[in-house]
Image (cartoon, helix red, strand yellow):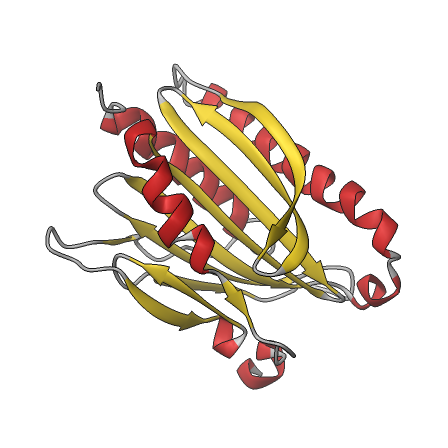
Length: 208
């Protein structure tokens, strides 16, 4: 099976990474961590103890503090693997999110996706990339044992999944963009292993 051309995957994933971390602050990001050839999958506790997930290597942590009362604190964990790119994040939403009714969650998830794909494709167009992110399907799912939402997308010959859930002010997401041949493995090991603490602590208070 033909593997996704690395330059296409790199470009799409870097745009994804930069757009997510720049959503909160325009500070320089750290270089994305890469897995070693013989790296083994293992569980990492991330988000200052708010969640745990299996990864084939230690990710880069990037913290973006909120700029104001209506902004969000973001912890982003990104890793380049032999098959593509994966990231997971914890977002501490504005206080108003505590009062959002559950029936508004789908609007939140769809809004997250639409902003994400629109900004990513705009950036890909700006750098004259020959690819765009294309939504293949979306549906309500159980993610990390919680009600959530899944967006399945493509980028060139790569395949991606974005899953997200919200618990009050806390939102968690996992994104993968990998070669089509590796999708099943990452669905099982990466997305399938995502676990949120029963009562996630507030990492922001620990940070400040």
